[in-house]
Image 1 (spheres, rainbow, N blue to C red):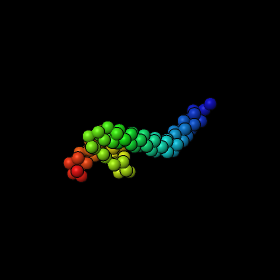
Image 2: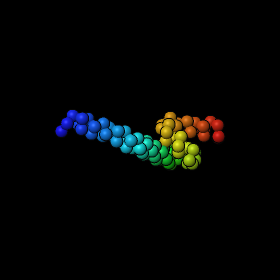
Image 3: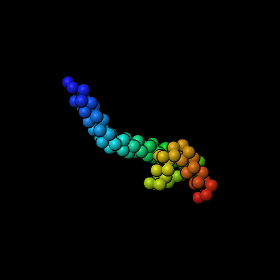
Image 4: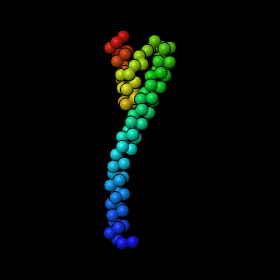
Length: 88
């Protein structure tokens, strides 16, 4: 094989990976976001389940699930503090 053909194949593969790799990154980010939102939903469910014993109820809606999913434990604590200090 000539060196020009090998270099052309390598450059072609790099260009192909650049175009194919971009949608894969987006799908990875979307999948990661969906997992975080699902974990936030489960955390809110358990907060409501165990918080019911002390009269704590954080509503489960789209806003609270997104906040708890993307902010994690800090989001759960913030939603609980908002509910206890501001809404009650």
